[in-house]
Length: 324
Image (tube, rainbow, N blue to C red):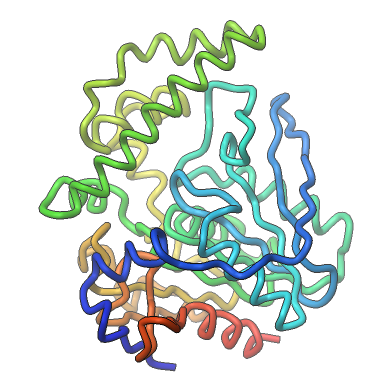
């Protein structure tokens, strides 16, 4: 199924921004929230949609949530297709701040593994799949490689994943991509300050102090700086480079045992062509589809500007059905 960009969204930035700013989302069926307690005295919130058929785990991107347009649109479509889904909100992303200074990052596979085991304990025989977008796509691929044949999924799909984190962090320092970087960094820095104040207010002083010890974050301008000063220190890495080396998912692709589809646009403004894996880096279970256009988690098609079509919501269900 080939992707053809909408003629009225004819560059990477329009493809990337249109769904975020202008997409009209369908009215979702009833979504049920569940809170799972984690072993480190924290929690994750998950949002259920649908009750029958294949169960699809959904992972959002950086600064996203289960409310992100691509998650909500896909949950709606999956239910219409006779499937159900559960969207994982990474820590602090559900609308309620988590209880620890630590949050989530591109290589943090602990919570997806915890969620998967919880679901498997409840329904050992139920068919399952998993889909990750952007940061969530990197987390998914890394987890699949780490687990090998220890997990059972019908299929997995990664969309617009930053397979080599250092290259992506550098790309966001260049040209128009700096505007995305500016917005993301601003949100992350504001989030950390809000979280510190929240932890102090609810009496979690030790956790608040961990954030306070990071110093004044307002001068941070790049992901290299943010990941050096915040992610590395809060999550046990020696440096941003160390974090990027251990967390980039490309090095795990040869270990994946589940049928896996990687979708990537060559014009993605968050990354460069250099991140794409060579064929010899892939296991026999992994397929990579590269489109010439589509931007970052965009992939908008259709001839009528008043009736856009979201190609991912055609391609993803097709792949899931092919793997049944």
